[in-house]
Amino acid sequence: MSSTYTESLDKLIEQFGKLPGVGPRTAERLAFYILNAEPAEAMALAGAIKDVKVKIKRCKICNNLSEGPTCQICCDTRRDKSLICVVEQPKDIINLEKTGACKWVYHVLGGHIAPLEGTEPSDLTIDQLIERVRNGDVKEVIMATNPNMAGDGTALYISSLLRPAGVKITRLARGLPTGSTIEYASGKMLTDAIIGRQTLE
Ligand SMILES: [Zn+2]
Image 1 (spheres, rainbow, N blue to C red):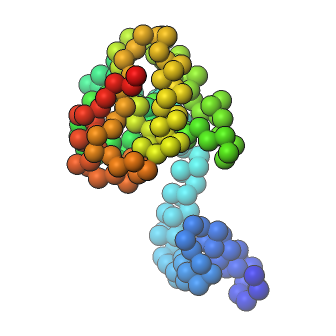
Image 2 (cartoon, rainbow, N blue to C red):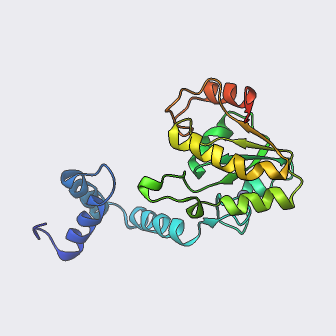
């Protein structure tokens, strides 16, 4: 990058340029926007970036994003803790919750098993899930990994480990097109998939 402006401004342009989908021109435009913004507005942005890095942690029960030791869903006494819905990432929870059809708690795996991408089962929170099922009064585990090859494979792998615990294992299926993701599925599709979940054999 050529140093056209001052050191600080160049640095800000460089940082914006690292964001996904932001090209050099947009990075420059954003940097000038910040330069010309009210100090309070610019500081609020800087503060918000700092907060997400400093305050957000993982829920010690389900691995969801949380600003306390346990997330809002695990703290919610109206939730049925005997139903655990297993998802790949926190964004999936947001989309499933939008349906209003979920009264369960979650378990966030942190991805899916993909040996070719370097993700082994030990990289996910599978051990914690098995511990939860063993130690808690769990009636059903609902596999809501993505309806694609990696998500299906992950669901089958986990269900084989959970089977000895004697828990009912179901999979969101009907209405979700194969190869799609929970993150981008519509509310109607997800609601159908939740209601029509099938037992994993
Ligand atoms: Zn939690």
